[in-house]
Image 1 (cartoon, rainbow, N blue to C red):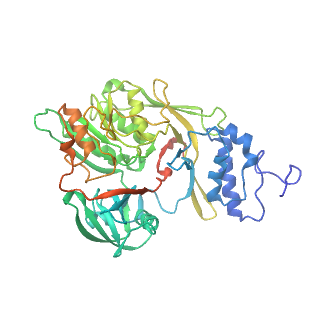
Image 2 (image 1 turned 90 degrees about the vertical axis):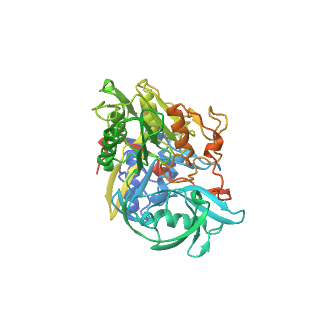
Image 3 (image 1 turned 60 degrees about the vertical axis):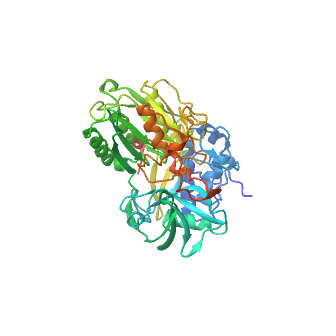
Amino acid sequence: MLLLCGSCAKQPYSGMDVPSSTQPTTENEIISYIDKRLEDEYYWLDEVNQKRSLFNRRLPWEQYLHHALSKLTTNEDDGSYNSQGQRSYYSYIRDVTATRGERSGFGILLHYTILIIDNNNRYGFVVESVYPDSPAEMAGIKRGDIIVGINGRNIDNSNYVNHFNNIQSGGVGLLDLSLKRRSESGAEYSASIESGVYNETPIAHYDVIDVEGYDKRIGYLSYLGFESEYNDELSKVLTYLASEGVKELILDLRCNGGGALSSALLLCSAIVPSSYEGQTLCRIERNKKNAVASQHSDFKLENTGQLLNLERLTVLCSGNSASASELVVMGLRGLDFPVTLIGATTEGKNCGMDVTYKHINGKDLEYAPITFMCFNAKGFGDWGEGIVPDVDLTSSGNKYGVYDEYYPLPYTDWGDSKRDIGLAVALADITGRGITQKDVTRSGAEVDYDIATTIARPVVGTRLYDELNVMK
C-alpha cells in the first residue's frame, strides 16, 4: 500500500488522499470533484471529514460516490432500502450526454413490477405512462397496456432485465412489441416502434370532470415531475383549469419522484387563495459548516389567489411519490391548508440537493449530493418514513372498503374515472358519494397475472433541488 504524507505530495485539499498515479487523469479529476463537494457541502460533512481516510480513491469514479457514502453512518436519510435490504442513495453523479427535457428513445415509462402472464412463465411489463408525441404514442401504446413479447419472442426470467432496460432507455433502434390491453378484455395487439426524439414533459394528462349532481367542476392533473424547464407549460395548464371554472383539484403524483423547488412553489401558489400570499411553504437547512451556500433558505408563496383559488386539494400518491411531491403535501399542511392524501404511503424523502454541472475531459457531469433538509412553516420535517395517506388503497380497512392489492399498478389510461381506482375514490371523496369494491372491479376485462418480481427504482429520479444554487 502506498503511503502519502504532506511532505511527499501536495494534496488537492486538506486531508484528502491523492489517488494513485496509475489512474487516468479524468478519474483523478472526477474523484476530486466528488470529494470536494462532500467535504464542503454534503449535509453530513462532519462525518465525511472524520472518515475520509476510509474512502478508496482507486475505484472507478462511477463506483466511488456510493462507496464513500457507504462508509458513513449518520446519513440514514440519504437513500432507502429495497426488500432485499440493499441500500440505494439519493445522492448521485452521472454523465449527462443529452440536454434535459429532450431525449432519444421510445417514450415509454415502465412500472417496476414484473408480471407473470396467463399462469405460465411468460413475463409482462406494465406501461406506466407514454410521453406525448413520442414513438410509443404514435404507435398507439397507452398507460396500463402490458408488453408480453418482444421481436416475436416471449419475455422470461432469463431476459427480462435486458428487455426492461432497452425499452426504458431506448437502447435499441427498433422493437416489434406484442401487448395486451386490459381495459379491452385483454385484447392482444402488435406495435412496431422506432427510437426517436421527444420531449419528456411532466404533464402526463389534464382534464375537467363534471359529476352529475355535484355543483363544482373538478380539475384533474397527472404530473410526473417538478421540472422547471416546463414551468411555462405547467402555468398554461393551471390557467386553463382556472378558465374552465375548476373549484376542486385532483393532483395525481403517483409517478412523481420530485424535482425543482421553484416548480413546487409555482404549483402551490396557483392553488391557494390570496390570504396565503408571502407565507413560507418550506424552509431548507444546510449544514452549519457548508462552505458554499447559506445555512437557511425560505421559500414563500407568490402571486396567490390569481388562478385556481381553491379551498382544499386532493392528492393521489404512492410509494413512488417523493421529495417535491411530499413537500407540496407537508408544506401546505404546515399552513393549515386542507390536503387529502389518497393512495399508499409515500417514499419518505425529506432532504434535497444543490445540483452542479461540470465538464471534465469530454464528460458533462451532473452531481447532486444531499445538501439540505426540508421543514414546513411549523418547523416539521420528520417525514423520512413516508407520509401515510388519509385513504389507504392498499388495504380494505380504509373508510370506503375499496382497495387494490397491486396498487399503484396501472390498469387503464390516465383520466379513466371508472377503471382507475385512485381517481374513482378521489371523486367519491370530493363529492361525498359512496363507492364500493364492485364499482372498481375489472369484471370481464382482467388479464390473468401474478407478480413475478420487481426491478429496483432508480433513486436518481427521486429528487428535490434548489436551482437557485445550481452552478455550471
